[in-house]
Image 1: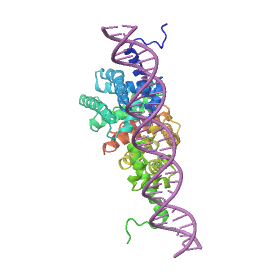
Image 2 (image 1 turned 45 degrees about the horizontal axis):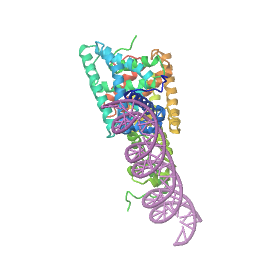
Image 3 (image 1 turned 60 degrees about the vertical axis):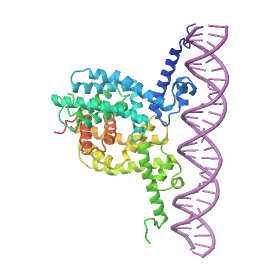
Image 4 (image 1 turned 120 degrees about the horizontal axis):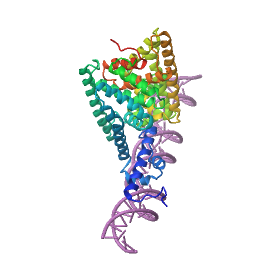
Length: 204
Length: 204
DNA sequence: GAGTATACGAACATCGGTGTACGTATGTTC
DNA sequence: GAACATACGTACACCGATGTTCGTATACTC
């Protein structure tokens, strides 16, 4: 009988377990944050015990770092790349905002990143450093887009590109999460905020 | 000898201790959040031991609730009231944003509130409820301002006032904190974001 | 100034959570 | 199918942090 509990190969079994645990850990992190995240709860939520979790991940820190990496890659594919595929810098920045709002609707990924960032900023911790790395790269890239748009003339002059980019990203994150269950106004309000930061006129 | 360690009356002594502990707890919360906040660290930072803390506050939860109340009242006086003193609703909303940016520069209060809100949203916890209470009132008030401004015509139509207010407050909080060490661009970028959300033209 | 209340420190009991050691069951290789 | 490797569960040791108890010093009352 080809029951659902049938997992033939070990690689399959391993992959399925890791995915379940990563997903449960992501949900847990978005609700409880790192410090209050109990691996017992994560394991239960994934349908296993802590033994399985510790078999797949060396420790709590490694598990969460894996979640961060996983979320980061997912977001890259779903939001960043499609937005960058647009030709114009301004169009890219707005597309990224709208794409992010849609991403927040269906994935706890953004909540995970925000929660961890709030928890670890100002600390000296591997997870904090991993987040800084990811956000730093993104900030640099967005600053580049802003600079390009300003040279082209589609984006008016304003505060330093780096700070404008930091503001842009912070707003993306917080507003996307705040309004994640308020479609369709999430997209509308996020675009309004972003246009304001960039200094371009409101949509008509 | 009138040394600095001289505290005559008991009420004075008590008040001084409570203030020191509250202030240390606020700094600690903004850095570590609730779960990772060790009362040993707070007491040390305030110049006492845990014994003093537990003498003044029943437990960790009560201490943090006191911090929340204290921050809330401080913010009210420094930011909300002066802004509401302005006649026009739109002017009030912008004044509140600018005032908040200044508040973030000098006080960890906003960081405390953000950290706690991220940590407790989605939980059923007294601290979470206290925050909901405070933010709910503020949101209602801001929604009222937006409605008023729209009736007057200084604020153009847009998404529901309640959601617009929620977005406004989220942005206030996150941007204020993100740029707290980036004067003078903090005020500039925060005003840009807020104007965008409200749908009013960028400042010239 | 003797007695009482308040402020604070020190030591202890307790608990939730992490990480580890070990046992069992399910695949894999020859 | 026998020997081995991998997946997972169970039980235990350990640690940090909370909250409580009790002792001591400082302020108030009469």
